[in-house]
Image (cartoon, rainbow, N blue to C red):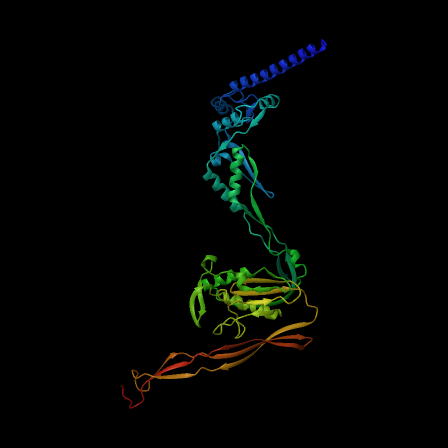
Length: 453
């Protein structure tokens, strides 16, 4: 029965030792908390320099004495195999010693406990290193990133088709790139705040619309049409060049409909178009995009000769001088369009080129095995203008004065003929256009003996 008091004594002693241990640990924690309440923890370095045991003021002073100036250091920005470097002196880069010291002071602390014992013990075993923050001129950094954007930004290039010695040649596509200015600026800012001098730019790779693989079965010139324009008419020539460039490189898939309005988009000043003569209600007036209808008419004739399906086409109110009557096409706003269907069963590719005052539009597709020829024929009826005489008593007797030179009108029917082996296999009416004649108007003076009333 003496074993029971002995057991009680053992339990009591163990409990006493446990309490003493807890008190000792708490005491150590309190002592450490008091000791490190206003100084950086031991084991914390800043940019490789020991600052543990120092106040933030002391640490900032030590960093200023110990760290070399970052001005001649080089920051490197990379993206997709490209790189761009500049010295920190270019953006007035320098260390923020005080901010770095404050970051070192906060290391291992949280809001609940001023200091964590476990953090202290870990730091003694494995010291920590905080980066030296770099401050800089944001305006100068912005200018450098804008320069980088100008150098790196490039539009994608579609695969291209051209003729060389009557053979189709395909040029491979090229991927484009667009630098994201805001994100790259933020990445540089964060990198410098963490003392880093190398980073990846933020941007977007731009895939081309037409790739060489898309053109793999395009191996023949289906049709080509050429028109002439006056280079000296600067505004009109400018608009023709813009529209030509916009349609060149178009790939129309089998069964797909090509829309010229959709391809060109708005033809206003915001897209670079200038004012030049256009038809509005049968009158030539200056408006944005004058000249585009020559591109439309040239493309229309190439599509006719390529035997593509014409879905939508409108004629001008009067004949134009760059294509025969009935072979023109006009577009306006989003309500008059030129549309055709790729009915060939293979992709077709549109190429448009300008050399001097010559506009050439070519349509490429898959080679046609049969000996086929597409011809465009026209039936044209001439409508002579009427002569209208108006008496004018203010004129002298027998005097005649012309006030409007009449213009010939036409009734034009356009047919497409497909000729195989010398025989016409199909003859299709494409359009019927009526161009109203303009009357000749004469003012006629009074007849002999007639008096003015």
